[in-house]
Each structure stands twice: as C-alpha cells, then as structure tokens.
Image 1 (cartoon, helix red, strand yellow):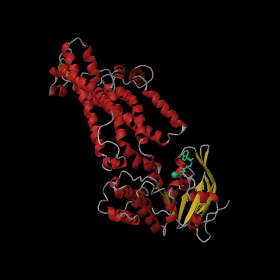
Image 2 (tube, protein in one colour):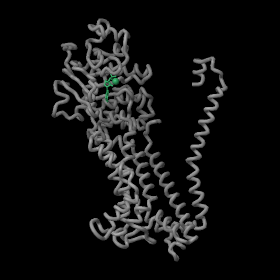
Image 3 (cartoon, protein in one colour):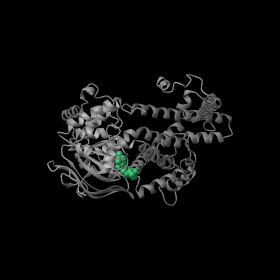
Image 4 (cartoon, helix red, strand yellow):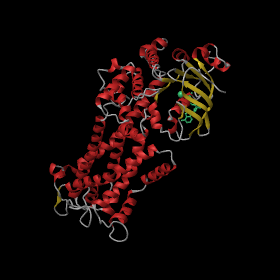
Length: 306
Length: 259
Ligand SMILES: Nc1ncnc2c1ncn2[C@@H]1O[C@H](COP(=O)(O)OP(=O)(O)O)[C@@H](O)[C@H]1O
Ligand SMILES: [Mg+2]
C-alpha cells in the first residue's frame, strides 16, 4: 500500500507529517484515550467501592447460605436474593422473550404497514414508562386482593410478570433492529430462490440476527436485575425461598431489593453485607454479559468476514 | 411501438405495455419486449434507466418494495406473471436471479447450493448431494471447492462467491436466469469466467443479463435491449445493435457519447 502511493506521488516525503497532521493525530488520539478512561472508570469504581466496603462479608458461604441473625441478614448470606433474582429473570423472560421476539419479527416483516407503525410507536412509548408506574399498575392488576385483577398477592409471579412487561418493549426494539441489520441483499438471495417469508425468517434472518437478539434479551435481563421500584409494589422481599410463587407466602428474595433494604437499616454490618451483595450482583451481570458473547462466538462459524 | 426480436425463436418471456412505478415515480414506461428462449439477452442503458426494475419485475422481487405498482402485462410461457392465481414463490423457482454483489448465505458451501432444495422439501441425502455436485459443476466451481464443501462460503473469493450464487440458482432447476450486473464487482479474470459460464448455460436456460459494460453485452449476448429513461429504445440482435442501430440514441450510447 505504502509503496504504491510512493510511486504515485514520488514528491511526498517518506516521513515527517505536517505539524497540522501531527497535532490532529495527537488530539484525536487523546480523545480516544479519554473516551476509554471515561468508559472504564465507572466500572472499576463500582467494583473497587463494592469490594472495599463489602470485603469483610465476602466468602463462599455468602452466596450459599440464607440470611439469618437479628436483624435478619446480620448473619448468613444472600442465597435468597440470588435464587429470587433467578426466578424473577426466568419468569420475566418466559413472558417477554416469546412476545418481544415475535413482535420484533412482525415489525421487521410488516414494518411498512400502518398497524406495524402504530405498534412500533406504542412499544417505544412503553420503553419510556418509568418502572415505578409499571410497579403500581402491576400491583393493581396482579397483587391487590381487592377489586379487579388476579389477586396473586405480593408474589414472585406478580413481580416476574410485571418485570416481563417492562422487558417486552426492550426485546422488541432490539430484535427488530438486529433483523434490520441483516443485509437486504442476503434476504433477497433467499427470496429469489423461491423461499417463503417464513423460511427466510427461520433459515436466514434469525440466524444472522441471533447475536443481536441475544444481546437484546440480555439488555432486558440486566434491566430487570436492577429494578427495585416494581418489586416494592408487587413482591417486596423474602428472607427465604418460597414454596409457591403466588399467594400470601409467594414473595421471593431479590438481590437489588436486598441491597436496597440492607442499606436502609441503621446497622453497619448490614451495610457491609449490602456492598458485598452489590459485588455479587455486578459479577452476575458481568458473567451474563460474557456468556452471551461466548454464545455468539459459537454461532459465528460461517459468519461473513467483516 | 412494437419491438420484435426474431420470429424463429420462442418467446420465453414477454411484456406488453409494461409500466412500473415506485410510489409516484415511474421507472418503466410502456415497455414492449420479448426475451427469447435459450438465448442470452443483454439489457444496457445508463444508470437509473430502469434495467434492474425491469429484471426484478419479471420474478416479482419488486413485490417486496412498498409502493411498487405495475401496469400492463408480463408473460412467462404465455401465462400472466402477475395473474391472480400466480404464487410468486413458485414463480421464483422457475425464474432464478443472481445479484450484483455476491450474496452467499452464512452457511457452508454445500448448504448454500442445497438451500433451494431444502426449502422445496427435498430431503433425500443422495439426491441433494447429486444436485449440489451437478450445480457446482455447471457453475464451473466444482474443482475449486470439492475438497471444502463444509467450509464457509465466505472463505471463497468474490468471483467464486458469485459462481456459488449461480450454482445456488441452478440447483432449483429454473427455466430462466436473471443476472443483474453479475460481474460488476469482480476482477477481469473472474468476469471472464462468468462470461464463459453463461455461454455454457445458454443451451439449457433462458438468460437475461443487465450489464453496465457494453463490451460485455457485445461479447456474451445474442440480443441486446437498450433502455433509456424508463423506456425501451431499441432491441435486436446484438451484432446489429452494435453495428447498425436504428435509433440515433442507441448509437450515441454505444459509441460513448453519453451515459
Ligand atoms: N426501491 C426503490 N424505490 C424508489 N425508487 C426506486 C427504487 N429502485 C429504483 N428506483 C428508481 O427507479 C429508477 C430506475 O432504477 P433502476 O431500475 O434501479 O435502474 P438501473 O438498474 O437501470 O440503474 C431510478 O430512477 C431509481 O431511482
Ligand atoms: Mg441496476
């Protein structure tokens, strides 16, 4: 490359960029460096602060035992929170992944129709609804024991479904976008062979977009993992693991709720536990993130070269 | 303006007073045109004159474009392509297409060629592998890929990818193959291979090729159609179009005075 240009422009000096270009390179290079620092500092800060403040409570048993002592949590770990968070993620995903992926496929396939336009608009509006509002609506629809609704009480099912509804527009949006990123020429290649829209979707569009769709689901899950406001109204908290996910004993624990509750207690020991729980939650988030990345590497066997 | 090609050759595809619109823009204006069977017909004309629109109207690929609308008639073997009973999916199995940019699927080389059979429900392994081999041979790609059929299609060069796309189209045994500037993204050697390949294929297939390159049209085609601004200016035997065109605009174009 270099050589070819040298032949084309023999008068250009072999080295020595102009001052302007050197300054520009320096400024742009520094900006990139600053951007990197801005991106990485908060993550390191979170890990450092959580570790520093929570290290006294950290041990393997912290993630394998239930909270105990008085006030509850002074002793023991956060297994109730981990189990509850997993239950909530599973419930929320069971609702939102099929609905959101289906809606994303529909918007991609029928995107130009008026009904799809209205669906997209509504879905994007839902994306902006504050989670506390989802919480109170979830309360009236799923939890309250009076009036209309399901009368499930403060329960894992009520919270899981409420969180699922929060996730749906996220999954919808990202699924549609991931499908739109699949090159049109690629889709046309299959259509021109006589594939039906369904076959194109199943055999080409979804496999090509699967990494993006997985990322969308992950984004939704991460969002759900951090929610507390909806849980205050639909589940609150449980220091153990319930036998049932509905009814008056159906509440589950939840890591985010646990941190929220511990940090509000006037107890130094619980504050330490809260920060240790924060580190656990952060590590779970990072592991989920890496898991998705590994999965997407696995599906890249025949991927197009960048 | 009735344009006839040659009375001796069967008309595989014919359009009559065919107009096409994208919303309010008219891309084709009352085109009358026949594509003869088992011949190569080239479509030339400046960029934006409607060549791709014409080609994509024949296998109804434009159905997917919101706002697309056509008027007039398009016939395949005398039957309406846009008739009420026509299933565009089945139509596209009879009229294959190869695009400007090679667009292999994110699958193995083998599965790329087999895909058209899979979607038709062909399962028998021996049948599929026979057809894959036959199609790759017909596309002059077999010798280069026979040892790596399980490899990714993206490991092939651009020219090989385009021949893979041709093999993929051949595997479903279409009657007509539409090629939209199939060599414009390729180097001269790959281009030459594609051109040779077309000569091999024309015994068995009706071929319509859009090309930007007039030498290519002159080299490969039996008939040439010149489009300008959505209208068909002139169509005829390639030698005549390039040596003695009827219309002065054709002459201006092929001698490079515009376009
Ligand atoms: N999808 C589309 N939507 C709107 N206009 C289009 C579309 N595709 C092509 N056109 C217009 O139709 C005309 C013919 O385009 P095209 O058939 O692609 O020409 P060519 O292949 O000869 O370059 C052009 O004016 C182009 O801008
Ligand atoms: Mg074109």
